[in-house]
Length: 106
Image (tube, rainbow, N blue to C red):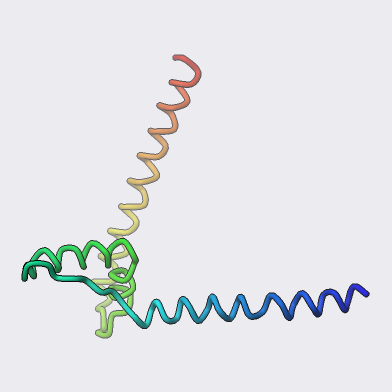
């Protein structure tokens, strides 16, 4: 009986997954649309840039570079990423120590 109920449940759950995939595909296909009000193109471009940053499209475009990156540039980028990560970890450690002292009442 359990196998029958599992097969029925799988039949009913699969269309939702397919529907969700289709919806996300349609959203990607549509892209970003921006209305230009009062022929103010600069304002529309800044609004579009903000939307692209928040949705992650800008990161996807940067990650999908079509040209060759020299090894020296890769090393520089890796060093910058390492420094950024270490700085973030250091700030997180400092913030944690401050919060611990505050909670303990020091």
